[in-house]
Image (cartoon, rainbow, N blue to C red; front, side, top):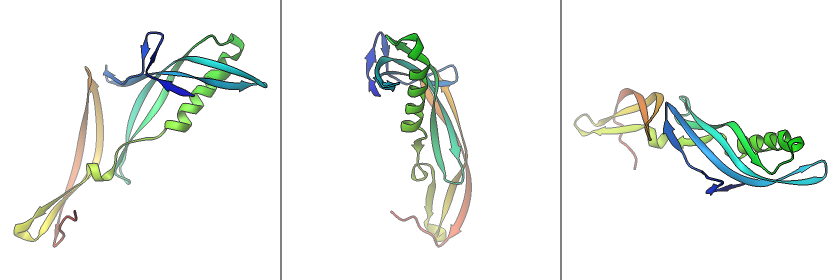
Length: 151
């Protein structure tokens, strides 16, 4: 399966609106159905669901397929190709790593006390509004004496 920039009036892009992250994906490819090569093209409506893995300090995204719109596929093969497209997207894309621990954690040196303040993420919530994505990050702070950041 191949991803394309656009096709049939649909563009592959990410949209932030109505509290959702959505991404229409223009796709094409082929599928082996009972020994016959079935070619397909069309687009897939997806949403991206963000989740924070607190023990690993990582923000992940999962692409959820909400609909598959195929052209030129025999109605008898449509369900098989739809399942193939859903499975291919799930296997090749999910989960997506959005933010790694190094991008979320803070270690601030405090020279006066020869220590540092470490901030570890407790929770991340997302808000998708009018073309923008806001991340609300909740930190837990802890002081450590004699520990300086390593660069």
